[in-house]
Image (cartoon, rainbow, N blue to C red):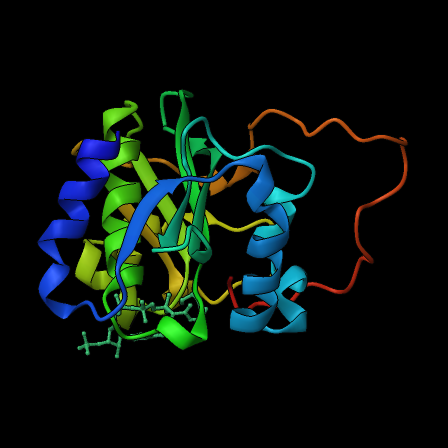
Length: 210
Ligand SMILES: CC(C)(COP(=O)(O)OP(=O)(O)OC[C@H]1O[C@@H](n2cnc3c(N)ncnc32)[C@H](O)[C@@H]1OP(=O)(O)O)[C@@H](O)C(=O)NCCC(=O)NCCS
């Protein structure tokens, strides 16, 4: 893993002002990650439809990645989540991943860190045998990694979403062909200390995506 991620980093080294390393997230990163997401995405970030998929779930195995600066501080984060991406006309459930949120510390934007993290995440997902990734985000940003609205056109988010921002990438050609329906979470559930409580206040969902 480290070798693969380092090679992704090396590929983008010419653009980079900040020395960084891409690594797996660990439990000690939680606070830093939450602070970074607040700074990068603002207080409404938990109102997105994608949150329905992530809430009370554990990210897909090995697919919660961070970028660290030379001191080991988290400066970017991306997580992927197990989902079912509808069913085929033959009635086969289609397993896939939902990516998000992706965020880079505003102090380190525009240095290729988001791109390196995306490419590492895609590579790791493919190595783990996943067939496709879906996300809700700006097409202008994500098309450079191969995502397109065409691949998600017969799928729906479980809540308000903007169709042109709902994007898919096949890691195995034809994986999403014929897949239709509402995406649902299939990842392992997070064990909750007290049943019926939520770790943060709930708010109405928005269609902005991430
Ligand atoms: C979007 C984000 C992850 C990009 O990270 P980054 O490290 O700055 O990205 P990179 O340095 O790899 O790429 C920069 C390029 O992406 C472009 N870009 C950044 N955000 C973009 C967006 N929302 N739409 C289109 N292009 C975008 C930049 O203009 C730049 O283009 P260039 O290479 O032609 O100069 C980061 O800006 C961020 O965390 N934003 C806030 C959280 C967020 O919106 N996340 C979801 C994205 S939809």
